[in-house]
Length: 344
Picture 1 (tube, rainbow, N blue to C red):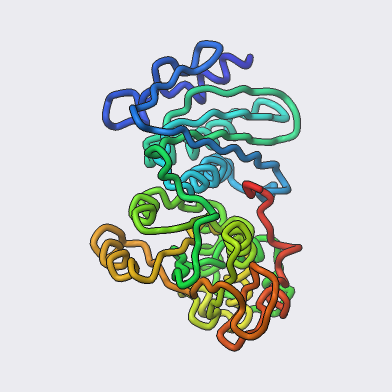
Picture 2: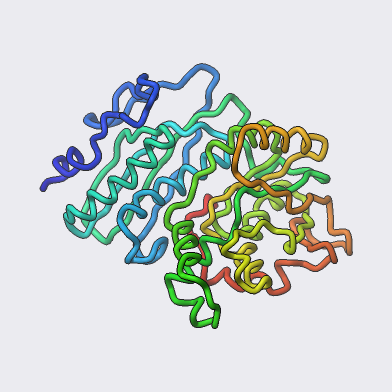
């Protein structure tokens, strides 16, 4: 099968991911040298690209359908963190050969998420080589209203969606690390956490509410502490968070608490949204969340101008007792569990 036949068979979807029937602003899609996309008035383009490599960003035995889902999901998560409406994506796929069963499953996972999020595949490329997937996503946001990492201010409250740490436990389960650490974990909990690793949820719906209140935002790809550090550095502030009150899933609660908290703080690969909201907006924000969303959103700390215990550098993260979290053992997983697909 040649390149063009491969594209026609597995990736020519005729923009059926757009339920509105207006082709999602696609003037010209797959089939020409480039796509032509229509922007609405007073909208800015938001774009991001990530590459996933087999054995680096996902285990080599990951099901093809999950690879397709995750490749798109991690990119859509970047748009969610920016407060953008996802609209289009391109796919550059490097394959060691033409494996039709793998391609069918990969395409299925990719298309299913595209349909669920109403984004259109508008172009790309295929080539031969070690398995790698590059996806560029594009979305729109109202002029000058995109969420950034640089807007957090002292007295803002820090929130996170979902239950960070699940994906890291899923990876540890796949790699056999839980057993080697002497952790007993039920098979159903392993399956739940492995699904969170392989099928992350891009928080696009949540972003639509969050962007109306937040001063800064980032998605949790490299671990909550590390990604919070990016916000603090860009905003020139510090923070106090309380790990003992972190939102843990029912599965993580079955681990020893100190180990569960370490996964939640440093695991990465969750693609939850971590963001700050001014104190005076928090009541209205939580009211909007209760009315419009079903996702669990938890306040985990606050932004401060400098550490309360002593003068230190900007960007330090303390617990309520004044202990520097990033300097006291909570980075145990940074070398072993880390998604290289950050936007840095």
